[in-house]
Image (cartoon, rainbow, N blue to C red; front, side, top):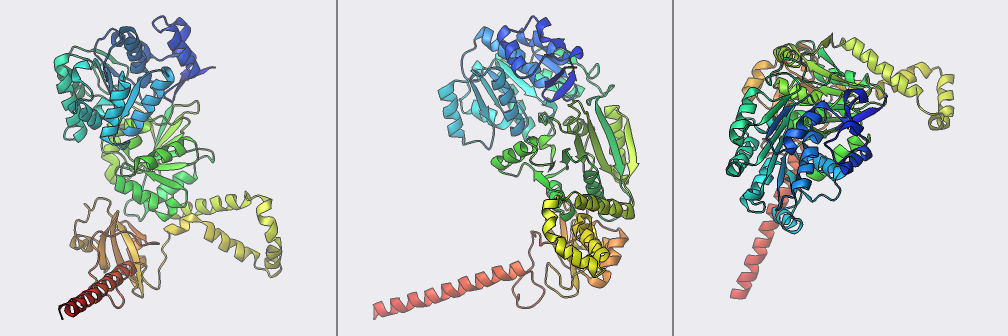
Length: 589
């Protein structure tokens, strides 16, 4: 059976309208679609074409992965070709992220290679260069993020009177009250409203409030098509039907269970599969990627604080299957095409059901379908109930295996990895192995090798003779997880929750760093009072320890080094001052 791919969406050809049976597309457009691998149009693409090409404002809602990008690009490009609008920015396509903007621009140029398009997003050149590009190319279509497009209109690079079409893709993400993006979109619509342009709005999760807001700001009476449920409410599943949903309950008051659960899930995936891991904040995404056991599995972070070039490289590497596991935020939750992605993993539930719908929409677009796995604990259960009600999907519920079972699975994975090593890699070691067997130590050595190779061992308690953080003997450095520093806003609040003494407590990335006496480490780990990790490297601290008397133990080595540099600089300054005073005295004499 032939398979049609639309922005990653896969469906049987019988469920879509064949290109040969569609009369409203030009011959050149049909050829372009065939060259891109399309054999037909989906329902949302069919139903949106006529009102949009006739110039009527339009609001559409369809499940994630059903080809909403082509649903507005096809009629808009046909309308621009037929009516020949003049002036830069006759059509504006506004999207919530740089990555999605680049993807839509790529799809448009695949449809019409000769189209004049300008990509207007932050992180790609300066404003003056972008204005010059618009002046030189006079583009019919400008694709970009709200803030940059409003800047171009304010600067006069895009004459507001020339704008004929405004597209808001993923509109509900851009119209969240109190956000900068919402202010930019409202400013854009207010500036174009007197000229009555066509307003086209798409999303998989628009509420009645968003629809009313767009209708009021657009000033028109739009046509509405809702292929999720009537009346823009969640009465039918809003996610792709080919996706399965699973949630794993984490035990209460247990240490590192979320990281253990993530490692357990990642190890259990098929060897040739990829997974996109979602965290709720940038800090959390970094904490996940930097956790030693997770990092050992090859997980890479992608977030909005990265330079754009690094974000592009990571996303392209993930699409090219050069990276297997990627942890990110909602930066990649909307519209991003990730062909063949089988798994989406939620480190914890999102803050609202809409977030789940869009995260889940990154998978389930291939013939093999997809799976969404959510880690949750007792505190997350109310949100999980809201998600199940909103998505109308059946969730398979399971529990995280016990620590003994997790350890057993980890050792089994190591054993499998050892047996898969090619002979070319171990042939040169046969003499050493023969000696070990002769000495009767083969079993002991093999057990030691498995223990060393087991990445889950990095989750186990490891006391140290000297604190990695401060250098104090008989202390172990730990990181107490508190991603936004809201659970324990102060040192006193932290001390009140911890059942053992803490020394040299400092705020750090993703939590608090402290020294714990070696005699209390086991008790702290087993108490479950806080989520705690034993440090294997020194993290960045926000309020560094005072180092005025940093001569002996108790001062982090990097602080002592910085203090040494400062003292050397002061001494150098004094020497130069004395020499200058001496020269001045000699000159006066």
